[in-house]
Image (tube, rainbow, N blue to C red; front, side, top):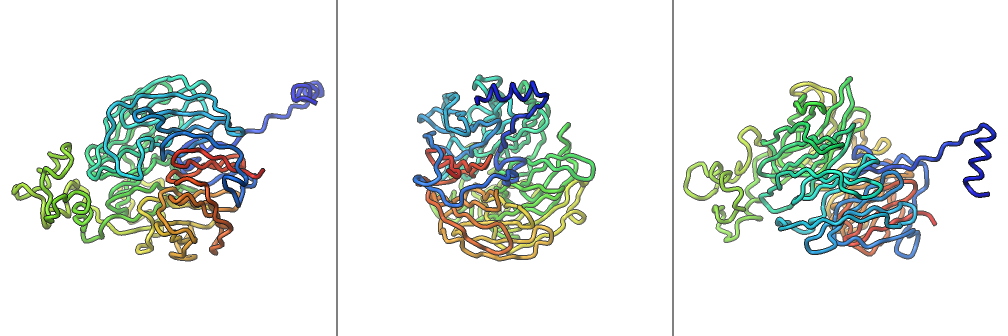
Length: 476
């Protein structure tokens, strides 16, 4: 019996069966950047180009993550030397629904393994919001791909030429985009319907970072929460006013926090230590003649004024003690190190002493990979395939620095669903772990392409963005 006749008979009988809603993974790491799928559908443990591959398509170079909204997969890629493309595919079949191309113009400097197609889109189901360094924010109709609006933003500048990689989120009719670069950090709130800027929040005391904003509901208030240099901050989503801050983070925050039940979890490893050894990173990246000093000619020209401020004795070079505070705000001299912590949301003012529930150091989390909080577990992984797991409520160690048998670099953040944790390595191998307090490796799967982007999960399907391709895996 065809579907139309079946529905008609149900209506005649006075029975209405609503259509089954598809699961969404509408931004970086899914709902509120949690990295956790709520679907009860089973996910494949073993998969490859020969097994449990439902479909695949070529996208072009990119490291932005795929997202899923309304049964569609949205992704980006560089389809030409100076062409960014945004794609929409049918999630179940991989059928291309539309492609929108944008000429990029002159491209900024980037450092591998970054790509110019680095930002993850976000969607509210009606529109898709895409960021690109030379265009700013772009809104496209989710059904047709038609451009609805474009909002130009200042191009970011990074002292060590990491390049743009920040991603937008959309919440309650507003697109939030945090641009923590090394020159003019700012948080933008943009009207999702028309692209008008609602407000901006100055973050000039920050250094470069890529933390995605998250939404925290606690103590009767909703906050836009961002992790950055030295501070975790909560903002009023209506006005951009800073409501609270916790002075408990590190100098450089690349990873994004996770919110669950009003508690914010974060982990990070930053250059140097509490004694201000930033100079080693600066000299490694910028000291081209290896004389142990920085001359103005050795830094990007847009940082000339910052150079002059950092050159405190005016001798034309940044050296010795000047290196440890170079290019940082005088109001924020955060040091390096590593931390894994839990902070209760919903505060006001300085909450460092009142809302930090636990804070453990020297556990070597990643400087790139965001933590995963699933069940009672907080899981982290870092370079070399070294994984650690902690009790999310107390910070008590389950295991520490145990290898998951895939040595290499890790840029993608872990995701979870169906009682499993999926950990993608840059070398193209995805390790599947059993969720829980004991390390149990279920499988190691080769997808045939480098994986820098974080996978997406929706309706029992795992969407993996390789360096050039998009793969959809599911139980056949």
